[in-house]
Image 1 (cartoon, rainbow, N blue to C red):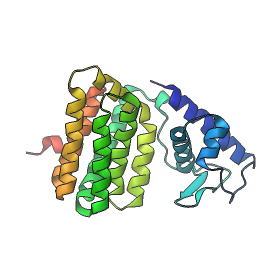
Image 2: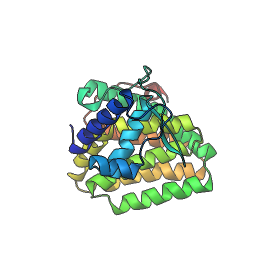
Image 3: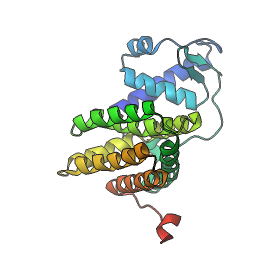
Image 4: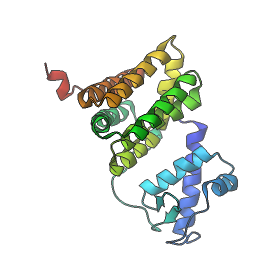
Length: 239
């Protein structure tokens, strides 16, 4: 399930992490800019964004808008981390989708209650771009992730955004695989897009319950498209 992009991300993350551990980048110093790192390692800006998010989630750096990445510690945090995708079997991946369904449906409901006009504009723009790239595998994967992170941002709770952004990065290849499977079936990309639009419309209308249900439906369908054995949920038992 591994792709070259994921391999590059892991390679660059390991190299920068080693430099931090060895004091090449001292605690309190700023890492080079994203462009400088991309040039240094010969990778894309998208890979560097994933690398810095991995380093942040591991406790090595902190990021602030307008400041960049600052080295926080020479040792990683020992807190909660998701396993890396190559180590995930179908059952473990299904359990992560189970968790994702609860977290993202709650985020969508909060987004419906708290969204601003700017949030709606941002989500609408991502959806418009996604519609234009439904049959372009890599842009569609990136825009799919951006849509879900945009919903988390619309909660105006930074911890939702950080956690769901981290989960999206960890599950990047699963999303890419689902998209690849979708492209092999006629008209399925449009059906997936309609699932996204249903979530968006509920958020725009401020309907928290509809946003929650639309997100649960979308992620359950995504898991089914991956052939994952989801377990029964409490909501399945409700009338």
